Length: 419
Image 1 (cartoon, helix red, strand yellow):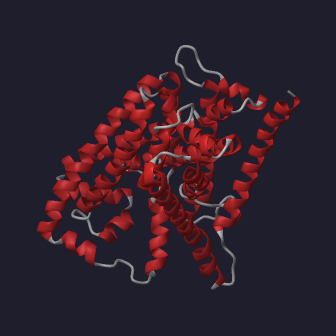
Image 2 (tube, one colour):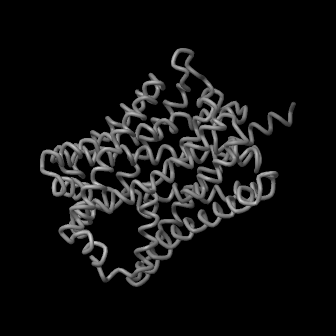
Image 3 (cartoon, helix red, strand yellow):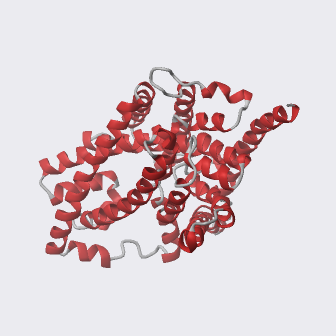
């Protein structure tokens, strides 16, 4: 995350148009690739993450209320949060921005308190040392668990690229956006590491793994008292909703970005901007629909299996919270390679080391995903005489979506050729 964000921060000082990552792709790779990565972000990345985050925010709220995190209440609340976030962004982008800043500040309160107080308590009672020296499940191989954990954890650290989607709306974007990318990503890494250390001082790894979101609440109540723990957990819920709002911010602008990059007849309706709110209304509506569709897919492909039921979509059931993230890292590769070749006058560190670091980091994420969602499940299923390779069926769906994007893009070039 940090390597890629730093490489993009360098490009952000040179290129500014409508949507950061698409602008950078257009500048160093070309207009066609720019549209394709924008198409993927609009159809796959933004809405899938937004839908999943609505469900996660709902789960934390259900833990606070004492409801079943897999029950009907959870899905109803997830749908409500999705619509509420859309309404806030579509009706008042300014208010949405203020809400985002406020929830970010609120988020830091429980994180820092847990980091400090939890670490002190964990060191005094020995639980912190125990958690870092005890293996919960020795049956899991180190390599197998490591790559699965990397791909799963990437969801917690993802979303930073959405900041580039509003570069045209930022004051002095060429100066402020690079600062936000670099300082923001480094801060996120440091804050969440110290937060986890504090969390490990309040609850054992075994309890945390078994409890999930409930485990986090138990940790807060253990480190503080029940009242203070519940109060701080409310802050955690608010921070989750704030993250959802941030994802929706990028989601509502997805198809607008695609429409602005190419004058494609079938996408012209997404160029429409409300004169009062200055919001891309049609793009926002489409973003909400896609998020709801991905939330439904996530429920049928992942949540139903957690409850012990068969997935709705059979072999075409994959984790929409992980694979789209890794795919976007794979799509960064041509940008970083082109950056190495075309961006001159940057110096050795910015022009060579930074893009190479981005390439290596992206390749590492892709390799981890291939192992976690391809090789590992295949080997496990093969031992039982079955076939299971989620990443293969994901790539089939990905290919279909991208082919549709190519067909849409071709209309632009046919029109251009006639002129």
